[in-house]
Image (cartoon, rainbow over all chains, first blue to last red; front, side, top):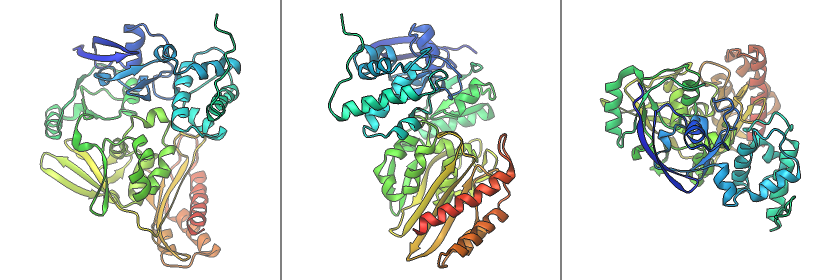
Length: 169
Length: 284
C-alpha cells in the first residue's frame, strides 16, 4: 500500500504542498522532502527529543507525528526560528556556556528550552532540569545546558539581553 | 525504525468515525495524540491497515462543567489538563499528576482519552480516573453507554471498550471543599514511567479522613485500589498507629508484579512508602 495523500502546511513561513505516504513521519518529511536538516532523528520512538519541532505553536516529537497529521498546520523548525530571532538569546547563551559538543541534540534542546522560557518564565534550576530531561544529551552531562538556560531566564527577568560571544561583523 | 505502510482517514464527525471503525474491523486503529501508537508503529509492534484520525471530531474536545461533574473530552491533551483552571479548581489531583506524564513535547499531543483507552497500568490517568470515581462515556453502534472507571480497567492494556466503540469523554464529580488529595510517583528520572505511584483522594474533616480512594499504579496489571487500607482509615482519627496499620494492610492486599528492572518485593515496599507519605500529607 503506497497510496499517497495530498497535504499542505506552512513550514517556516512558506506554504508547502506535497504528497506523502501516510506512514511518513514529520521529521522524515522535513529532512528528506524539504531538506531541512535541523530537526534530527535519534531513537524514532519518542525517547530522545532530537526530532523536536513546533507544530501550531507547541513543541512536539517529530518522530511521533505523521506528516499527514500536520496537514493544515503551521510547522516551525530550528532553521525558521533562528532566522526570525526567536532563539537568538538561547543560542548566544549556549555558545557562551559551551552548551553543546557534538551538537546533535542542540536543535531539540533549543526548542524545548524556548517553550520553557515562554511557559515558565520563573522556572527554577530544578524545573529547568526536569523540563529538559525529555531531551537526551550524551556529551555535556547537561550542566552547561542548564547553566545556559538559567542565564537566559535570569536575563529575561531583568529585562536584559545575552551579549553575543562573537560581535556581528 | 520506520512503520509498515497503512492507509489514513480523518473523519469529521463521530458517526462517520464509528462507521469507518465498523467497516475496517480489527485491522484499524484510532489515532488521537498517537504518542504511544506511533512509537509502537515505528517499532513494528503493530501493523494496522488503516489509521482513523479522530482529532477533528468536535464532540470529543473540551473541558466543561456539566451539572455537578467535570466533563473532560477524550481529545483533551495532557497539557490542556496541566494548564486548565477548571481542572485546577474541580479536579486538582489531575493538575498535580499532569507534569509527571512524560515530557512537555509529548504532553502537547498525548490525550486523556488515549491514555484511558490504552489502559497502561503504569500510566497516570487510569489511576487518577479510578481515584476520582470517573464515569466513562462511550459511543458505539448501539448508541451511548456509561461505565464507571472501576469496571473499565479489566487487565493489562485491556479495558471494557469494544473494538467498534469510541471513548468520547469522562465525567468526574466536582471536588468538594473538604477534598484533599495526594499524587506522587517514584521514578528513576522525571518523566519516566513510575516504579510505583499513588493517586489518593479523601474528604477531610478535622483530623478524620473519609471516602478514601487510594489508587496505586505501576504495581499490577491494572491500577489497583487499596480497599482494606481505605476501610481502615475511613472515619477514624488519623494517628501514627493507624497509618502503620493502613500501610501494612495495603502491602498485604496488593499483589505487586515485578517489571523488567524492579522486583515485586521492591514495589510492595514502595506501596507502603507512598501510602505513609500520602496519609501524612493529606492529614497535615
